[in-house]
Every structure is written in C-alpha cells, then in structure tokens.
Length: 397
Image (cartoon, rainbow, N blue to C red; front, top):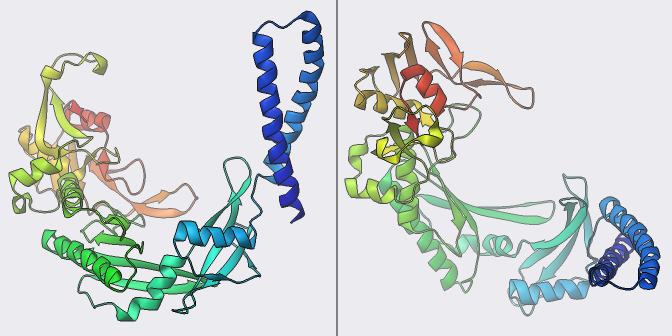
C-alpha cells in the first residue's frame, strides 16, 4: 500500500513538472528578457533534477492506480454492464506466476447467485510496474449456464477454476471445408443459445483447430488455418474459408481440385505474398521491372514470411520444367549446380538446439547424400536465396 500511494504522488508530480517545463520552453522560444532568462535558468536546473527524480521513481516504483471498492463497483456497472452486482468489501490477494501480487475482488449477482471476480492485475509494463482491471464475468456466466446449452458435434465448451478465478473457452476441430462450415454454424448456434438465455453480450473466446498432416510433426504446433475469435464478433465463414484455403495453397498437402478456381481467386485477393518468377537479366532486385515477373495464380509464400514450402517448391519445379521425381510430400530433382536434392516433409528428425538450449527434432533436406538442416527446427520453407542457390530460379514474393 505504501508503495502505491508514493508512486501515485510521483506520477502526478512528474506530470506537473513536465507541464512546467513545457511552459518554460515556450517562454524561451519567444525570446524572453535576459533577466527572465537568468531566473529561468535557475528554475530549469531545479526542474531537470525533479524530472530525473520523478523518472527514476517511476522506473523503480512504477505508476499504478490504487483501486477502491467504489472503483470496482463503477467498473462492473459501466464496463461489464451489470447494474445490480454486490461487491464484497474485502479483496483477497494472489501472487501470480509473474511474481506480482494481484488483488481479487469478488462480486455476486443477487437474482442468479452468479459470483465473478474483478482482478486488479499487477505486472511489469514497458518500463515500470503497472496495473489494470480485468474480470472473469463472461467465463463465470458460461460455467453457470453450461449445462443448459445444447450439445454440438464439432465444438464444445469447457470451464474450470484456478486460484479462485473462472476460465472458459470454446474449441473445435476440422479437417476439411465441410467440417469447417459445420464448426462455423455451431458457433452461430451457441451464440444464439447465449442470447436466448438472456446473455446476448457474452464474449467467450473460441479456437477452431485445423487438423492437417503437419500440425504436430515437430514440437512447434503449426496452427496455420486455425480460426480464432470470440462469440461477440464471430468471423464470417468466408474469412475462415480464406484462411483454410491459403494454408492448403501454402503447404500443398491437399488436393486443390476440391476448390473451385473462383474460391482460390477470392482467397488470394489482397494476399501479401504472391509468388512469381523474374525472367529479366538484372541482378539487382531493386532494378527489376514488373513486366519481367510472371506471377502464379495459385502458388503463394507463407503468410508469416517464412518463404516457399517444400510442397510449393515441388509445384514450381514442375511448372518450370525441372522434372522433379515423386510428389509434393517427397521428391528428388537435379539442381542448377548439378547436385541432386531430396526434399520431404518426412525429413523432420534432425537434432537442433533451440533458443532455450533445448534439443528439438526438426526439418532438413538432402544434397548429394548429405543432410542439410533448415535454418530453424520447425522451418519447412525456403527463402528466395535458398531457392535460387538450388534451382537458379529468381523467385519473388
């Protein structure tokens, strides 16, 4: 408590001092008299010292707000929208995993008996300790009405309580476009169920996982194609479908004939990383003429800028008449330098040391019989320069 009160005063003092400094700067710029300048010079030294003191205090003590019961009541009424909640007069304290002690205020809705919490969360901000209010109202309501919700085939709700705080979410899984559509429809239906029970503003997080062949190959989960959001603003099915199709186009592990040309074209509207081949003679990329670049209609680089996937490189080699043997999953080809390359999504057990000094199995390819590790353990995409060194093709994305 002592630190909070002192910190608040220093934060206020910092603002006051900064304001006065701006005023002095304004007077200086307006060419005040020599006598005024001498006075101001002395005051500027005082202010400079005060600013250093205030800044140091903010860094070491932080700038936080000391919330009282009345603040919690206002938060519940104005920001959560519950007008009749009763806030318990005493908060509890809990030391979080980050080492900071949070304050947990409990509130109860009289007619339903639902109890929820407003958490005064302390943590390290950009440069100092700070705090803000968050709550578990939506999750507490979900736990209360969970047994009243209809059963669904593709999505499910889950709630639990940890350290006195409610947690909850909606999860689902899909493997193809039809199942993705079913997940989306069920999300809309569960939102309607919330509305019918009188909780039309309920905001529950959801994650719809795309279960594709590469998702869990390495310790790093490839969640491209997943749909994320909350029930207050569910993504449209078209947006979810776009993420799904672009993920398939990236890795090429699914038959693209299941998508119409119109669906592919629509999914690639405004996509950031279309792939092309530069056909000109310039070696300086900044001098490339757009007229010398042939862009593919349905080959793309990864949306996180990792590059060209193993599967997409196979498709490029076919279209550029480099005659790869095999398929998108596992293939061989002779490179521009005469070396024989073997690339496969199955080549994923090369030992890497990650940024935490832990050993992770990851991807590699084979050049003339020798294993060549990728730049990082979960990378299964090549950069522009790597593609050029292997194939002699000037890939653009």
